[in-house]
Image 1: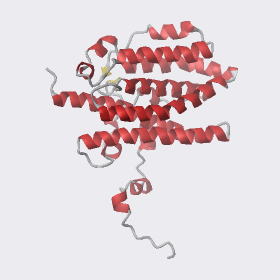
Image 2 (image 1 turned 135 degrees about the horizontal axis):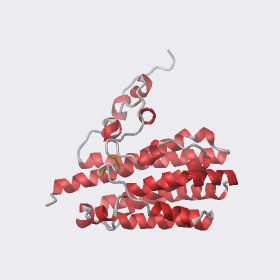
Image 3 (image 1 turned 45 degrees about the vertical axis):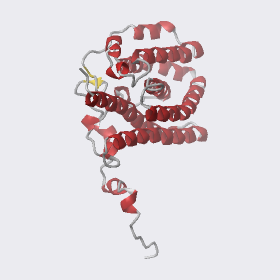
Image 4 (image 1 turned 180 degrees about the vertical axis):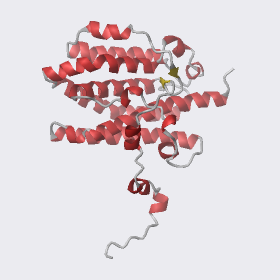
Length: 278
């Protein structure tokens, strides 16, 4: 028997999977700003990072409000072992083709994941998902443009990166059996199953990579038929006992004194009296 508290626990864990994934993806965009091939690329990275981190903090805030947590508790009050980010983002991109395809796959998978809450019983969450979707649409347009401009060498890099990246994201969605037993779906909090979201994601992958780029369909079909991992921490949608690398965690939550000082909340720092003329 699933209690109301159990249901809320499931919902928080699932929303953190989306929020923390966007958190890391936003930092990917920040990290590669200086690797942009044009000023337009750099501007796109900055805008996409701002949007994606904004989506993260909006999800954090709604969860903190629901549970009467202190502000920024989810951003600065958790340890690395409590982070629910998608495991595929633990490994940095090795080249432009890898970056483009991973950004495409992670962004679309996270969006399809959140879409399962549209039409569900939580109307405040539905409104937030709609807003996230309207901004994320432009991210997907940018990445689609980068796909179309890949050189032959970059496309080969993409194809080499695809099997490992795609298989990890498919594992993130979980199995069909786990999807059908989802208590959030049974309670109407979700309007669609995660297996349906996975199906929509796969259709988009085929549309972008097979139809548009002409990548061999058998490459993707072989990945789709591979067995789903079983040693999974379902609450974090990661391999049991795994955490992001310490270097990545330090990039997200730096511990240098200057960074720690900058975290002081507005209601505290606004009282500072700094004389700029001394």
